[in-house]
Length: 413
Ligand SMILES: [Zn+2]
Image 1: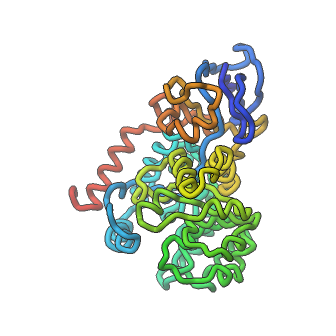
Image 2: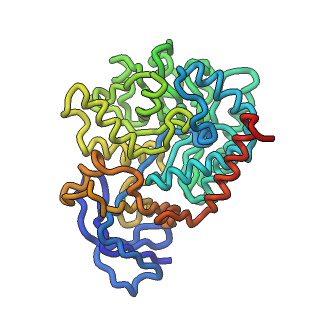
Image 3: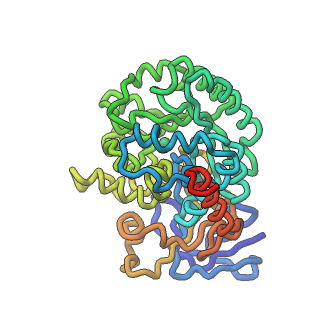
């Protein structure tokens, strides 16, 4: 199947400038950039007054927590987790996780996200939801160090064997929850397993000021040799910043969730200056409450500008949201180039906030918003197009989610 996008304003990567061009997609990949006649394709879309650019990457979330959106407001992390989130999570079925994840994907596709990194449980349901919808996901099974949990590392390995690499959409990594919920020995065991499989690891790090452990102790385990996505890093000390500046490490900044739970503001500018690779995440919808990397990008820039407006350039903001996220999750290139998977979004520029049109990248960061996304394509397949979700019955997903949350909160049987 050949799909031709005609007359688009094309932004191939976050470093280049947009130019008017046609784009040819074939068998899930970008097949050509330039001028093409309509005879070259079976499906043709006029993209005049539309920007085509690489899609956003959500490098840290707990997708199925969409079921808990709006359920626990105005609480600190500890109460939020123990009083509201855990009691519901204990009762989530595999089917609940499937529909909660699907709901998250509907939202993410609508907001221009093409790939995400997830930490949750019932991961088979997450994999099935991603494959059914057609979205790219790095799955990690959340692991905590209690006796009842010991079998879960084996379960994580089973998920890897069953789902890793499936349809070019799913990757499986390992998810030790945090240094305060996993012993060093357990983290070492998980890291050794991940290294053997060449799989990435995702872990929460220094989310709140209460967390007392030493990063250098953590990095005396095999974790230092893994590809690691460290979520949050709000309360990192100066010496930690230099420890995080490694090619195999990524910091995932979740600004909305950190603000809403009163956790603080991560020193993103300092980390970038010291060579740390920073990307963006939304965290779960119970603490955000939207899954909107476009929004996180602007917020991340503004939070660092509070002390110096030269902090976080347009380039850096876009790089965090797209390029670094793509590197961290490892499923998409973050670029539109011949031979790469066609993971892209179409932005409707026919809005007052995109005029004048000659500074589009600035407008994307500081003026536009994710609801300007007109279409989202993943691996050459439209998963959102002008109000429609071609791969899934969205209304049915909404119904199933309402049903699940009614049952889980006891408002319905
Ligand atoms: Zn998290």
